[in-house]
Image 1 (cartoon, helix red, strand yellow):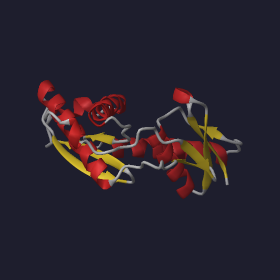
Image 2 (cartoon, helix red, strand yellow):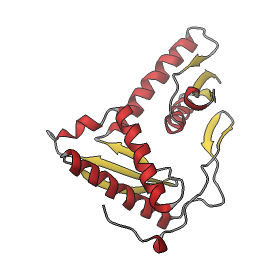
Image 3 (spheres, one colour):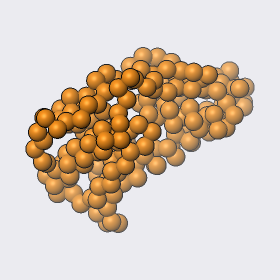
Length: 188
C-alpha cells in the first residue's frame, strides 16, 4: 500500500448519511458534503491499495476494478477460473472485508466511506438470493398473509430488496433498529 500525505486529502463526508423511508422505499439522504467524483476516485484508489495488499498477504490472485456509481465507490475483485478467490466470496466475509476497507479509507481521508466491495461476483449472487427471498415472501402474501418479514440485512441489501419488491408491484418498508433492521413486504 502506498503512503499518503495528509495535505493532498480531498474532503469527504464527515457524517454518515441518514436512512430515510419515502413511500415505502428506503434511501440514504444526501448530505451537504456529498462526495464528489474526485472524492470517490480517491476512496476507490485507497480501497484498491488496501485490498491489493490483503490479497498479497493471503497469496490470493485477483484483479481489482474501481468504479463510481450512485455516490459510492465500487471495488470489484475478480480472477480467472480456478483461482482461489472463492475463499473470500461468502457474503459474511465480503461484508467484513467491506467494513475493514471502509475503515482503511476513513483512516486515510478522515471521512465516512460508503464504498461497496464485490468479490468474485458475490454481489450479483446475493442479489439473486434476495430475489428468491422476495419471491417466497410474495408467495406467502398471495396465500393470504397480511405481511411477510425478511431476515435482518444491511442497508444496501434492504435497498436492493425495496427495488425488487417495487418491480413486482408490492410495497416494502424497513422496521427495527441496528442489526435487527429488516424489511417487511405488504400488498400494494
